[in-house]
Image (cartoon, rainbow, N blue to C red; front, side, top):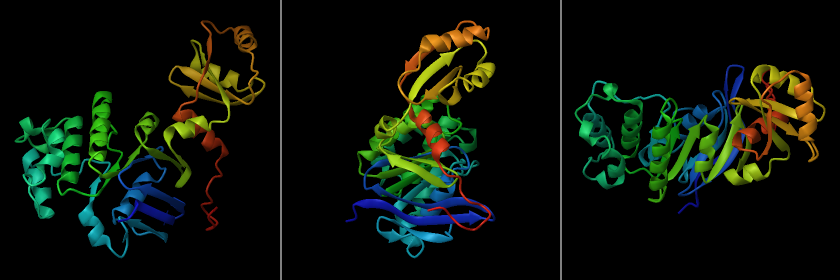
Amino acid sequence: MVSNSVVVNNLTRRFGETIALNNISFEVKKGSLFGFIGPDGAGKTSLFRFLTTLLLPDSGSGTVEGFDVIRDYKKIRNISGYMPGRFSLYQDLTVEENLSFFATIFGTTIEENYDLIKDIYSQIEPFKTRKAGKLSGGMKQKLALCCAMIHKPEVLFLDEPTTGVDAVSRQEFWEMLKRLKTAGITILVSTPYMDEASQCDRVALMQGGRIMTISAPQEVISNYPLSLLSVRTGDIYRLLADLRTYPGVHSVYAFGQSAHLAYKGRNVDSLNLYDYLASLNYAEINISEIKANIEDCFMELMQTATPPQKRSGVLNS
């Protein structure tokens, strides 16, 4: 039995001059919940399409449960479940018809594997005669997950499954994933939502086809090298520009209605910063020291990451 469900080595994929995946490598332990966190264009979908045998690489290799992604693609398709980013079920079929169809493709039935999906399917079963195209976003999400699991896969690939779903449904979905993990299923999930990183055992932060770091979420945060202030006033846009001219500032980014100001060292005087902003006629100034979150860590890694070479044909290692 393999100890790692998924192994990727030096994977590269180009689309014309754009490098979608830039020499990436990682391992995912069996039975874990592994997250790929990054914005649109980071390479998450290309990676998942490679691992589910839908996209050939330019170079590099990968295995799923010990099977080679290229050579053993039929075996991988039988042991994997895949939920793409866009809702891809048959919208003119009912909930029950969609689920029955996918079960039949894999030579099983709803009844045979009902125990695996019952916690999820029970929430949409009252609507089993409703056409899939008429479901709400959260219900579509649950149906797609049921269809990806009905053949009892060993590995689940979920590509941005919570995009466009309300906050309550997002949280419910992650609770479902944690219950699935207890059944021994390895789960790889991608998301653009930084706050979802804390739900994973380990995360890979991605940008521009690269993996910037891989670690447990709390380790990513504990390795943040800077100090942070949260600054709030009535004019966030002018505030960002003025804070970037303040002595000793490393970076400034908007976080909702506040600005996160990162600085090196431990001796930034909040009172002096307050006086500086007051001299620029800001009102209702609020300054507080805060701890970094995953998004702060991502922004700092973005600052230090070397941009990929697109035109020379040479990849940075």
